[in-house]
Image (cartoon, rainbow, N blue to C red; front, side):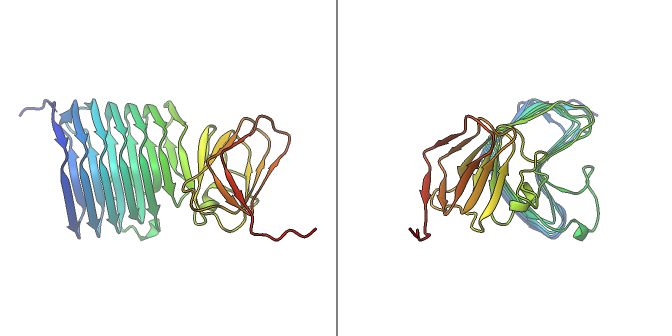
Length: 291
């Protein structure tokens, strides 16, 4: 039996559409290394588990995999894994557009892998009720996360991704002592997921949004309070949809930036901070002024 990995395989510009009542996998490999998966379009509807692109270790660790410029859309009733890496090294996941809706979902999950770059992906994921998942058939189990890191993974760089999710575990790190660097990522915040990022008194969750992240305001219309306590950038996701909010910068939020944002009936307060830059924004008011 030949137990050597195949190399130099290019899977490019394919369209894969799958509708199934069972577990559904678009691209699965446990034997390819030094290969490219580029510009594929995958659309899956499954009443069970749904998998987009999966790399697994059966006869040896995979390495030097390039997954870029793919569009993956999955609707499943159980668990969704849009891109999965299991024991993969020295690989890149970048410039992909990922959308999923399921009772449980991992957009990008990385298990026992090293030296992985996850950069510049547009991730929209919407999880449901994990208790409705009937069984656990995958090694990674069930959960809801945009990017999930598991078991002894190390040197994982997660940067400049745009994440739109309806749960708080947007980047989930379940490793023991591996080095995970998550920085300069952007998070879309709207009326539906506001409570995933801010607590009951309006303070930003520091364990969800890290320093140097960007908050992309998306039509916040309920006069929400945003208490910013770390260095962030605030912009609008869509300038045509202004937000109605109150922003307070305090504690460690010095050097934060508000730019390219659209507001209506909003306010900004500064409490013992410095070097706050407010640049190229639109402020409008529909309230009557009484003199």
